Structures are given as structure tokens and as C-alpha cells.
Length: 99
Image (cartoon, rainbow, N blue to C red; front, side, top):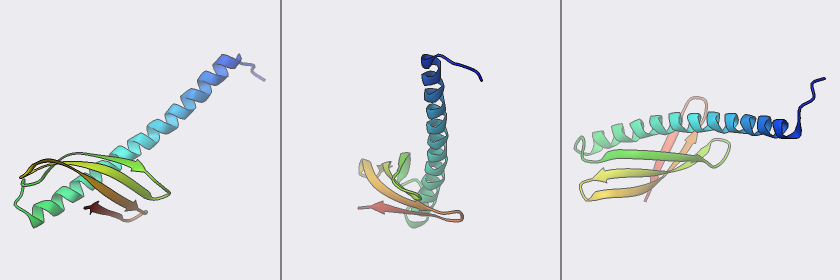
């Protein structure tokens, strides 16, 4: 049995926690990128291409397969922040821009 001082145990526990958070953060970033591209593609189909340009999308996990986010858009009337709801499963990503 290997004995470790209490401070080392705490550091290892913190490192493990940060590793888990880093993995979740990377997954959120990947999902945000996919959703951002999907929204931009849809907007380019329904409006003049480039009329609404997404600057950034940040998602926060709200449940098992639910996310909520802030979408920053540069549109014809200037910059605007919109709320986005996202649901995911193994095969689908469903997003909704909330008015």
C-alpha cells in the first residue's frame, strides 16, 4: 500500500476533478461548434448569406441531454445576444433560438 500525505491526496483529487471538467468543457465546445454551424447554415438558407453572422455560441449543460446557451450575432441591426436551447441524443442535435 502506498501512503500519500493529505496534501498530495487533495492535489490528486483536484487534478482528477479538473480533468473531468476539461473533458466536459471540450465536449461542450465541440457541440457548440456543431450547433453554431447548423444555425449559420439554416440562416444562410432563409436570409441573404452573411446577413446574420454568428460571432460566438456558448453552451452550458442543463440536464442529461439538454443545453442552454448564449448566441452572439452580428446582424443588419448590429450586435445582438440570443438564447439557444439544444437537445442531443446519439443521432440528432435539435436547437431552438428563443425569442
